[in-house]
Length: 193
Image (cartoon, rainbow, N blue to C red; front, side, top):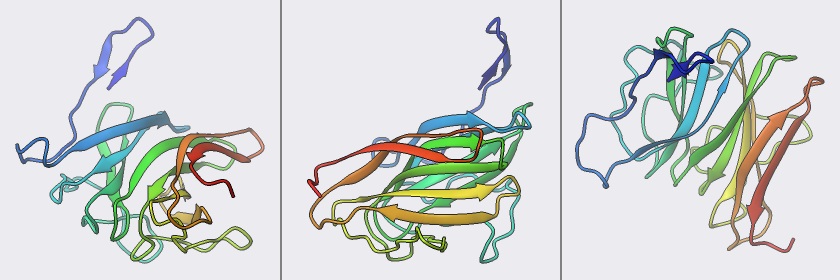
């Protein structure tokens, strides 16, 4: 939802599935940011195959960020709401494993949205090559951290993962940018390498 500085409600909304079999299916919002136009960008995770994407914009071509189907046991999701609370965009984001988006930030200098989380399987994961930083191998079998970028027009810029030891875990727990466009992330791992 959105509130004024005096906590007056501008809008509140729900987003989730139509099933009522909790805790079997869960939709969990993990983070939120606001872009330069005042749109709210929400990220999270879901294991539901029927999220309401019927009002979404976006073009399901190879480079536009739009995934209409749950690919694995759990996928991340990303939503964008206008300042008035109108859903502008909603998409799954994931591959064939257990994936989630845990952090999101907006870079006003580049008009780009950055988000990150954890992916458990590289098969089917929506990687996009970034020269010099691209890694699409799920080297950590318990989950690798990933970071991705889309522009304000919802076009994929890049997506890469981080993690280099099998049987270890990596995940993104913090994400921000600075005015020059650099991206900073924090996370956790149980790997010593």
